[in-house]
Length: 248
Figure 1: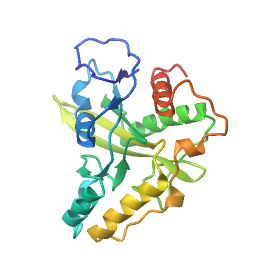
Figure 2: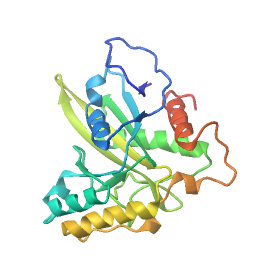
Figure 3: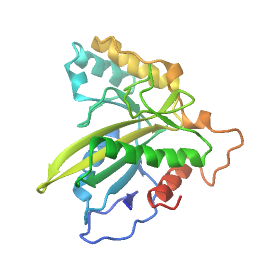
């Protein structure tokens, strides 16, 4: 079971402690959150996976290929003016907005024999699916047409994307690690997500676009009358923690 990280998380201690209950890290900037996410593999201890839950103010996180668009610099300036700074991630994929209405889930683990790109993705989708099912939501995995950063491990509810995944492999101290990250749309407005992504690509000189109708949010997808033990974001983190521990 992974070590659960939250708040002012401690560095690896060199011993295998039992996972501790935690809420999510609430970063002052998305840049700080992304940096922590990309350094998570450095905290692996005793080859135990590390799980980080976090959120941050608005930002558009893009892949390296987006930096080659004809007017990338102009698009960055335009989005900053709109209140959406642009960050470049190590993992692949295209533009993905994050905000305090989305939850970032990051799982870092040591690569062993049998660990594959698909296996690491499936581990994350299984975790998210377990949690969504606890809310009475049926999640499908597969590319969501007309959504942002579409990929074969998109997760959707009723045909609308509610989570997108990315992955990064690296060599560390003579062995490989894989970090799989997910952005879950919890309470953000799908229209705002589509607006930001489409504005970026339009100004950057790309024909890539997404549609509001292809984007969902857990808040709007939940069955009427769903009860929580805490505000939705906190309740979601609690359920993820339990699912990661195998309590569900």
